[in-house]
Length: 294
Image (cartoon, rainbow, N blue to C red; front, top):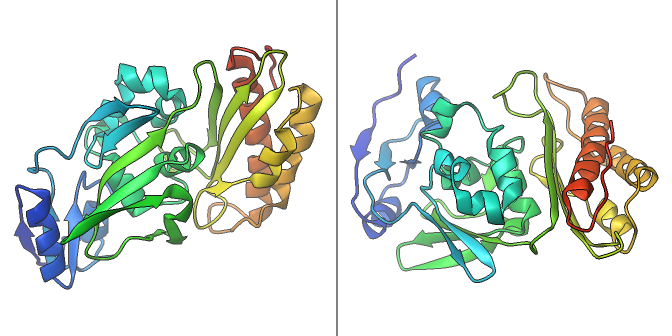
């Protein structure tokens, strides 16, 4: 199929782009186009106007700002993949980005576009949830920040308004020497994950876990922070027995089911992948010990 007819706009500034969003009643933003273009071709979306963000200067880039990395909304996934700064300061994102589609799609796909599309199985929303990212959105007349915990409203429904667009993402950094791991199961490499698990661990000398972040993707309408697992790890010394037992709590998640997998299978994957990710993250932590969990 071919896209429906629409009017194309190519603004050269964020101000012009949000002015168009405010003016047009049925508009879509074009970032990398890896989700929008197939949806246009299949006529899942029927916009009257398409606003291309690719000619706007200053919307892409990665830099360190105090205790956080700041990403422009139009930062390409490929730039994240090859960033030494990301690999050094936010290794969970570096590991996860290698599971995003294929090299050709990462050349075009953007960080802000992935968050705006908000597929619950996508890797960047899960990592952003695990890292407690803050999303900056802008509309005509001002900007506001949305905590990633408040960003999803429902299935593929971000909490910004139709006249707002993502301009930046601030990702708080974990201490040097923290443990991290990203595990996912997909039918083929490059497919959206059926289930994924993103783990961050801050481990004190002696192996005691000071802080944990566990996010499971693909099980519900949005990436899910598993508070029961995080709370069960705080203050404990990591061990195979602890991680095996605590990961079982993921089987209690109210998981969705669809044509790809039943709910019980997603619960099973969440438990297995979280167990593996905990072992890998603890092994990588400066104060952790080597362990392998299957």
